[in-house]
Length: 468
Image (cartoon, rainbow, N blue to C red; front, top):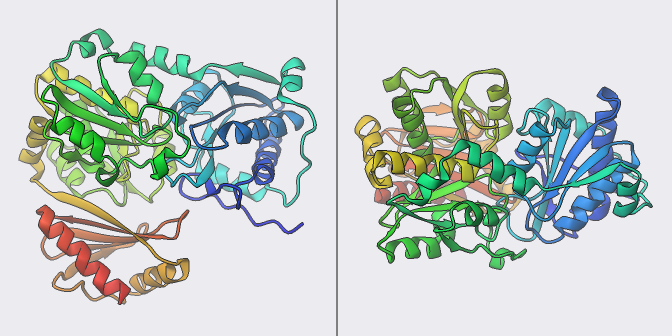
C-alpha cells in the first residue's frame, strides 16, 4: 500500500474528506499519537471529540478505537463540541492529551485533526513534531466496537458542553449580561458553538445556529464577507448593539458594532488589552502573531506593557502562555486568549469579555473602539486570499524572501521583516504582508492603511505586481 506522508500545519492536520482525510489515515495518526503517549505515560488518557463537520462522529470514533486498542484510555464527548471544550476538558479531567476532529474555518470539503496538550491549549510544536514522526505508513484497524471498549473500561462518554457552560457561569455574571441594555446577536456559522449562547443568554438573537455539516457551502470563517446576514440583522434591528460570530469549532471570533460595521481581530485584541489593563487592572505581557497590527505595540507602549511577536500559529502563543504571565495572546485570524482563562483561543469567551466590558461601562462597541483610537490612531485592515496553484504560490514567496519586489505600484516600502512570511512596512505608515497557507492552495495578502479606500488600493497594487 502506498500512503502519503501526513503533515501537521499551523493548527493540526487538515485534508479533503475522502481524498486524504480518510478513516484509514485518521487511524494512522491515532496510532502515532498512541505510540508517543505510551513512551512517557504508563496509563495515558485522551479526551476525544468532534465538531459539526461531515463525518465527525465516524472519525472521532475511529481515533477513539485505535487509541483504546493500543492501551490508551479515551474520554469520548457525546455529540458535537467546540475546540475550547476539549482543551478545558483535558485540563479539568487531568488527561494527558486532547484530540479534536475539526478543520476549523476551512471549506466544508475539509476535515482535520487537532492535538491539545495537558495544559489546556494547543500541543507544543515539539510534541506535534514528535507525534508526526511516529505516524506509521500502515496500521492495523481495531476490531472491537465502541460499546466493547466501553464495557471493558477503556472508554467513557463525557458531556463537555455541560462542563464548559458550568465553567463559564463561574467566570461571568449572566444575570447581569441578560439584563444588559445592549442586546446581542450571535452567529455560530452552523458551527460547534451554537448551543452555548442559546443556553447562557436566552435573550440573544441567534443566526445560523442549526446543525448543518455542509455550512451551506461556505467556509465557516468569521470574516465580514462571510457574515453579511449577521451584519444586516444588526443594521436593521435597532435594539441589537453587538454581533458576535465564531468559526466552525468556535475558537475564532468576529464582531459587529451597533451600525453593523465589522470589528476585526486586530481591534478585538486592542479592546481586550484596553479593558483588562485599564479597567480591570490586570497585568502581564502581550503576545501577538507576526500578522497582527503594529497598533498593538503602540497601545502597549502607551500602557508600558511588554510585547512579544511570534510566528503564525496559535501553538506558539499558547506555549508562551503556559510559562509566562500573559495578559492577551492573539493572532490576526481571530484566535485570541486572555488571562484568567485556559491558554487557548476561545471566540465565545472573548466575546463575553467584551460584552461584559460594554455592559459594565455603559458604552457601545463603537464608543469603546474610539477610546482605543484616541491612543493608537484609526486604521483599516483587509486581507485578500488569492487561490493560486501551490507552485506559483511558493514561487511568489521565494521571490519575496530573496528581495525580488522593490515596491508595489505607487507604494514603496522602507523596512522588511521575515519572522513568518514577508512583511513590508510601507512609506505611507501602513504595511503589507505575503504568506502562503500551509493547508490550502492560497496566498494570503495582508494590508493595513489609513482608510478603507487606501487599504483596498494597496491590495490591488500588490495583486497586480505579484501576479504579473
